[in-house]
Image (cartoon, rainbow, N blue to C red):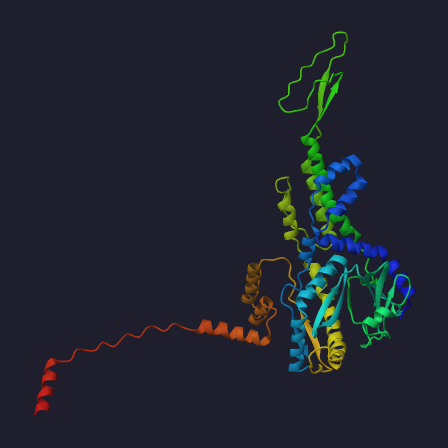
Length: 474
């Protein structure tokens, strides 16, 4: 376990990184205006800033871009147990349901796309397992592994303040410690959590860290996204500021006696020249001219180029004009193709789920059962592993187009009917596919039977009835 002073040094080293993550999360949550005001205050004179801040255009594109990237958990995700028993599958399903796993993993995916990493923390609350996504401005990871320096060996949580002191919670595979910003180990707080010895009972980090970078333990702060997210509303605010002065022109006078001049609608100005002077009074007007169309095109081109650097192909919307700018920018984002980015996310989160289920089934669940923190349940089979199946990530395509393409492949003999159904319904099990194929075959073979004509009974002969009555009488 590192010392309390080491904790302070690590957090201090990452202070700028943590500040940037806080800004990104704050803007993503909707607090954009304060950051635009700060930038305008630096870029404009005080008099101009006072006017411009009332015309800030708070167009926040960050939530929409992150939501567009965050899709791998918004479609069904299947988790199947391999090399296990029926109970193991029931146990996994129980954890998925009680942890609200798909919803929490979608939040983790959002944080990953926003900050290039995310931290998952499974825990127990009121007898039920939960999963928390730790915000990226509230944790720091470190590693003292010389062989695998990109794998965290410790996690520091920024757990708020107590008085003037910041409180830090630190975990590694061997222990747990609470310390403060004065470099003191807070044994008193550890006593409150019934862990004065600082024991880590599971023998490994109780977290799962998902990192976009293959080269750094802590990914580089995404400053270009922050700049672009602020640049768009700043440029729009500049246009608003220019439009204000274009609407209200500056009127000037030369050699003019302005004692009786009033600036008001329907006012009449009687101007007299000075007969003793050869100067002529003059009134003029300065009207700023702004090429709005060119500025809007500049915004569009910069946005499209920036999206391209993120592996996102912007949707084509034609020429942006003042009339269609708002809907045009929205359409660029709506029609973005995030196929490559989503494919990479599936790879990262597939590994994350493997690590998460290993942590839960082999470490946390046995400990929670032994300490009666959850309802008494048997432990999972030691050989059980969870396979996470994500829906196949496809480029932006209409489902009708996909169906037609698969139909053409099937009719050409390039693909089987079973594979067509599997591609259209990737979450179906083999048994469900068998049932669907059988159902389709039955519907095709059912033939409508023609109605059978009803028998027409011939009327009985009245003479025969009379004969029968006579025989009975005889």
